[in-house]
Structure formats: C-alpha cells, structure tokens
Image (cartoon, rainbow, N blue to C red):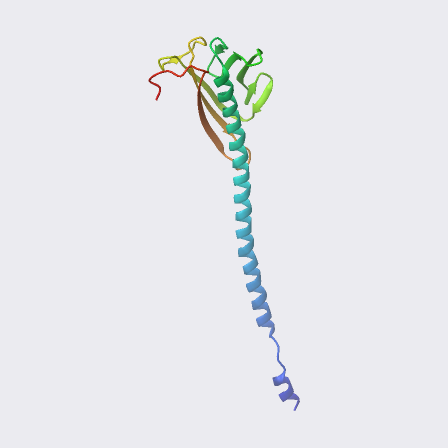
Length: 168
C-alpha cells in the first residue's frame, strides 16, 4: 500500500527544477544583453544630440553676429579669428584659444579640433582683407566626449546688405 501511495504523489523531480532554473537564467541573460544595448544606444544618442546642439549654437551665433555687421564693422580677419565692432559698439572677436571657441573672453564651445574662417569679397573670391569681406564661411569641428564622436559643421553668412550678384 505504501508503494502505491508514493506513485500517486505528484510533484517535480530535481532534474525538472534544475532545467527550469537554467532556462529562466538563459532568458534573463538574453534580456540583460538587450537591455544593456538599449541603454548604450540611449547614452550615445543623448551625448550626440548634446554635442550637435552645442556645435550648432556656436556656428549660429557666429553667423547671426556676422549678419549684423555693416561696412567697416569688421576690423581684422584671420584663418581662426575675426575681430569686429559689435552692435553695442564694443571691439570683440571670435577666435580659437587652444581648443575653445571664444567670443571675446566667453567660451562658446570647448573641444574644438578645427575652426576655419574663410572670407569672400564682392565677386565671390577669397580675401584676407577685412574691408573687402562680404561673406564669411565658418568650418567647425568639435570632438565629443564618451561615445558622441565628432561633429563637423559649416555655416555661411553675408554682412548686412552685402549680398552680391553671382552668389550660388
């Protein structure tokens, strides 16, 4: 009678329990890999968006201020700096100081690996003269931290009232 009672008892064997635990562990391992990839992707996207926003702000700031300049406001141009008189009558500049793009003493953007100002005259030719400059091209490369990578941007602007014929 005791033998028949043992056969009627229901439950799981030790092998079945171990097999279920292994399967649950495998599911959690795969799930954690997927979750980690999603978190890495989110971090990359967040860092990249912040870097792009900061870089665009710098280029847009230079473009906006250059568009406000009139004849005689631009006082000196160079490959990595421009000096001008702003709309308040202050002498100031945009320049590369180490790896910082600055407007006067204010840092606009850090980790700049390349900054190039190219000035164009009224016929569209490259010029090094502040008095002949009508259009400015800004090339900016910024290195991001972490996984953000590098952002390369270009902006162009005409001085106020200085657009010329033949500009494409």
